[in-house]
Image (cartoon, rainbow, N blue to C red; front, side, top):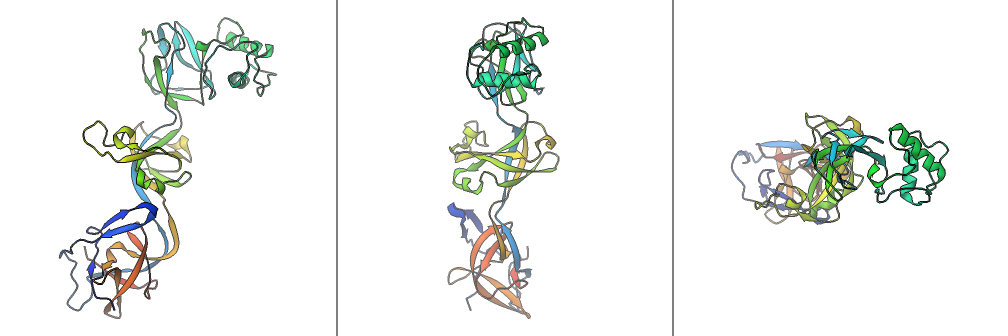
Length: 365
């Protein structure tokens, strides 16, 4: 039988995650705060050896926000005469802002409005325009899969212009439209009414309207979060929402560059971090102010049908390695074990003659 060692109490043992999902236990001197054995050799308390699923999930702090932040700049010179209010949502054909009283309207698409569109033009931006005209009811008979600006496209543009009481030119100027992937939410105004934004000067900072969560992970632990992993987010007010990891950054940056707690150059945490983005299963149900703090529960790896004991049950054996103190029939004996995965205050154990339902010694806190 192995000689008795010291309990590695949860508040005394240090568990460090390392690459590859392994762990290191660093023993510290035992303390006498209720952890001594009884005179009869029995531990002060016991807990059960359990068989079941064990998850290495963890909890991290994150920030509730919106997807796809970008800046909108004016396409030409002029005076800003109106802009959508901060926090407002703009949908297809809605006004984002006005320059010299002329509205810049939102259309859906991923290719930016980089040129005026007129008869004979070809390209993906023409397809985008035609899809929007069809969606708005102005493009009856248009083939939106064809990237050519036809006479039929010009007629549809005139109908769109007429609906807004604009001059019916059948052409679309660069300053008439801003393309974005979907509905946009105004995060903030970057110019005030009366300013002259001009080309390249931001007018609005916008985002998508779907809620997301961003959080940072140490680059060394980035492998614990994988695209598609299920997560649970604790929202402001205490409600929970399910979601999935949408992306894990491939480039690490110091924490202050990622907007983490070390920001501001005040000597904070400079560890390399990667950004992780979470999307919700039901984003329309998610409520809470922008930039609200939230907590994210990561599922991590799951082992099924394994034996586990509380981390506090571990003994550092004097001969090396780890063990647990099995209590049976009023007697205690030490059993050497091999450690597996840690999770939720428990550790997977194998070896010896451990069985489900046995009692093992634990400190009495």
